[in-house]
Length: 319
Ligand SMILES: NC(=O)c1ccc[n+]([C@@H]2O[C@H](COP(=O)([O-])OP(=O)(O)OC[C@H]3O[C@@H](n4cnc5c(N)ncnc54)[C@H](OP(=O)(O)O)[C@@H]3O)[C@@H](O)[C@H]2O)c1
Image 1 (cartoon, rainbow, N blue to C red):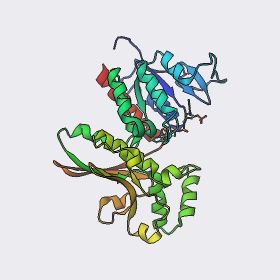
Image 2 (cartoon, helix red, strand yellow):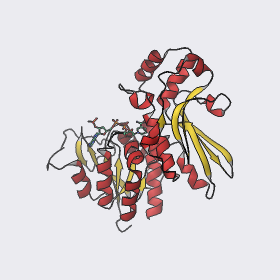
Image 3 (cartoon, helix red, strand yellow):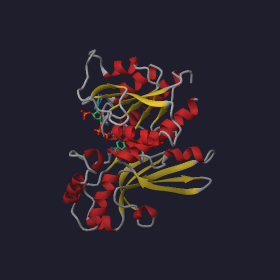
Image 4 (cartoon, rainbow, N blue to C red):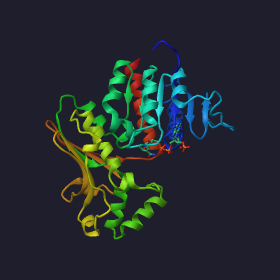
């Protein structure tokens, strides 16, 4: 790295953006990142914040369009080394995140994202763009937030992964846990919404789109080539109390031949004990047999941890 300072631009300053900002400054000394700083924030609500104060990043007044530049132009013009893309997820076009990521890579910046849309829908073209521009593209937070998931692969070189399955959506796991305890679907969903686990429009979770995106991302990493649109998908709307009591979970599964998300009975497996908002992932390998990892799959601090892990990896590789 030629420059002394390593600068970060955050795009999207909601739950994850704010969580990352706070965790970065909380851990900066511990991680010996004194020469790394968050130099810019771009957000539709707060505008373009330059040199945000680590203790109080939000401006009194927004300066959104002082030059009438679009977000992609601001990204291209920035002198940041890394763009953190934390805007909303879109499973139809992956926008606006896809354009933000491409603008960052084309202008020579590394990228970290927690946004599943671009990774699940445009994995190949993003990786190719990153390769051409010799930049790194990291997306740990797209699967199980900061809990180790697909990054396990880096720890077991040579091991062949034969299949992957898991509970990859905390909202549906929480609802199924409540149904198992006797609640009906509608009141379990309302409780999840009240606690902030489910969106007002819960479709992405309930109908399995979020889990489908995650299993697609893993399948892409493993070179199995399944597309997001190929995922055979059934959500949890019709899971009965009896099925939930027998240990039915929303399982995402992939091997080289098939990929699906559907309610599946797991009464004979450790997955049956993964309850509430927890997530789990199991890799079936040729050298170690089955490996299971269990932990949180969402949350402000938990997802910020994923972006911190990606940042540290990028610094380690690029220096
Ligand atoms: N929250 C989690 O636990 C979690 C876990 C894993 C992954 N993720 C993913 O991480 C991403 C961020 O999640 P989040 O929970 O932080 O969402 P969020 O709270 O809705 O924050 C997104 C932020 O991006 C802003 N934004 C939207 N479009 C923009 C644009 N074109 N330019 C600049 N800013 C824009 C939004 O502003 P407005 O509100 O004004 O639109 C909002 O402040 C999503 O893709 C999500 O799926 C979240």
